[in-house]
Amino acid sequence: MSKITLQLLKKIFPGTPNSKLERFVAPLNEILPRYGITTKNRFAAFIGNVGVESDRLKALEEYASGAAYEGRAGLGNIRKGDGVRYKGRDIMQTTGRYNYWKVVIAYLRVLTGKDWYNKLADTNFDKYLQSQEYTNLLAEADKYNVNFLANPELLEVFPHAV
Image (cartoon, rainbow, N blue to C red):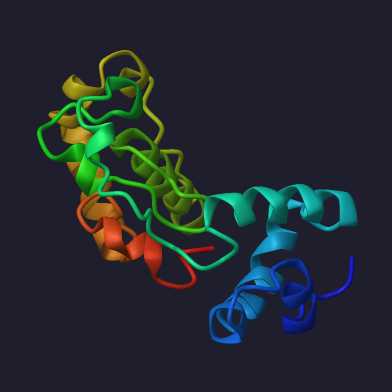
């Protein structure tokens, strides 16, 4: 697949201002090949999903308050305020404390080579959030400025937004 250009994004999302589209060109060209999004079909599937989730690359934060996600244990929103704090962000609209945690783990896997995944989080997320391993994870994420759990708005900042 050829490079992503502003002209291509304008064709896909004609109603989105150039100023919004321009900021995606370099990050998409850098990041898509890392994840095997290198064919027209894969790009079409990816950009279609992203287009829906981000309102055609206009929004990196969910328009709604996130209150509807309050108390949704399946999203890991088990503490008061989690729904609003961990509402949809980035081009894929990552939603919920649990999914933010998974993004932190993915980043740290790339940055440190260590797999921080803990099966306890799949069975008892509340207990995991009180563990030393979780505290260590947050400290490591702070070192690399990828602590999306403490700073959810970082998922709206490039290149994290992509």
